[in-house]
Length: 290
Ligand SMILES: Cc1cc2nc3c(=O)[nH]c(=O)nc-3n(C[C@H](O)[C@H](O)[C@H](O)COP(=O)(O)O)c2cc1C
Image (cartoon, rainbow, N blue to C red; front, side, top):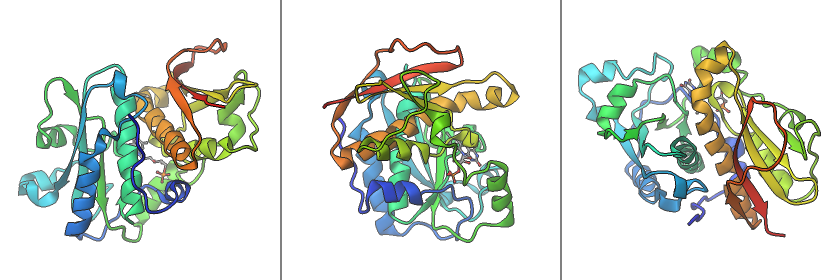
């Protein structure tokens, strides 16, 4: 079952407000904010369109004081994160759609944190995975795909500004590169209520800001098929492992927006008959009700 989390602001505003944050004030989360986040994490059986094909996921809020001093020096965010006191760490049972589901749930939590005025940044690569896995007591049948620092944002340092400019983090590809009608060569143009859902996918974060999601709408139906673009160049080899998280994020933006706007439909996994080059991998579809 999918229910929407409680956001105090419209989801589109929260999606627009979210941006990766790597510089924090050094303050630990206030007790009431901690409790709100812990409740959101506990209620994370709000589910995802991938729930039925994914194992259980669990999330914890870990604070720096819980680490011993040698561990604190070695949090292994490679000096990219400064002044943070708390982290959300998650684990999910190995399963067919584990990373997609994890991407959906952690992004929902990140949007919840954004709504509370907190900073976050998806870390899928630049963190000490074995240390955080030990802290969450990762079991053998689980993976820890990513974490996020969570805290009060401080002015971005020049190092953070450099990281952002390297990833062109403020930019997104235009619609015609990402969204199509009928096949992978006809650009999608939308003026109906689905515009916001697709635009909110476009605004989502992705590893390295590669924006690997592609959506093909059927010409006459409100059916949207989600694909991932894989590449086997040098960068692709580094980033392909994160793409199933990226699509979970994209699906969360689409689905949370649809829920809020009252646009009804259902998710399914029937691969449509759309000819693709080998680089596109089919993931999931939305079938609109009308
Ligand atoms: C799945 C995933 C993994 C990421 N891993 C890292 C990481 O390891 N280190 C890092 O500094 N940023 C990481 N990022 C953050 C992206 O670089 C960032 O989202 C992107 O540049 C867009 O910027 P924005 O989040 O400010 O919109 C990751 C993002 C996603 C979605």
